[in-house]
Length: 379
Image 1 (cartoon, helix red, strand yellow):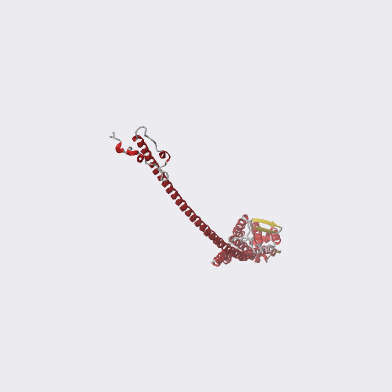
Image 2 (cartoon, helix red, strand yellow):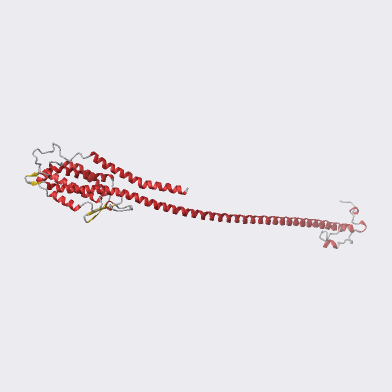
């Protein structure tokens, strides 16, 4: 029974520790597939947005420059979630500097295939996701490698992706990284044809260098984030298995200790039962002795009371005898003529008992003179 319980506990722990991470991982893969299968509506300008003259207004070109820089900044914001050194941040920053130095003609060439407003509408949600994630997570910056550190990390088997901490990256953040990459990918694709043109002797292909660097960085960040998420899933499974092994060992140790305690408890219980039986036997002996003593005392008391009653009865009988004989002495004195009266000495020393009885003095009157028949007429 104990082994069945242990097996059930291990199964529940394994399900909680492994199935949930796999379920979350599956949801992220579905999200990424949905973004790719749905595709981007495209960043190419609509017919209404195109300038028939082929030359866009300066403010429109500066808006394109701003959005290209905004895309590069967003890629850099997502970089801490990828493994360290996967993203070349120095090259990304150099690309930003090149974008800032692009000529009006280079921007105008890119503007023919890219709509700044569409970049803005697609990148805002990604920026909101990463900002929300950063506000709930402490960020450490070391040299060129920003590092996001979870405030209460869980232990993991390996820490290759320590930049994202041991906790899983939210699905929304991973999807936002996909969106950023697809924006960079679309910008790169749309810029290819324009960058191959020579306009007034100016090689606009130089503008694509910066765009390509941003695309490479975005791809590295996106793939790195997905790698870290997959790596974390493996770490969670490995860690869960190791912890389950520890739990199994601990439970087995606890079960062994419990068996030992139960065995000791059985021994102690036997000793207690033996002691209780001995004490009950002693109590029975004491009760028997008390009963015998009470019976002896009661018999003694009965005998004493009987003796006392017999003695009292004898004393009453003797006293009654003495009283009667004393009355006889008084009557004899009254019936004896004056001058002949005499007290019998035995009356003064007798006690009325059988060993010392009092004499009947009436029987001692001479010639019957003490007889009540010779007392004359009664009053």
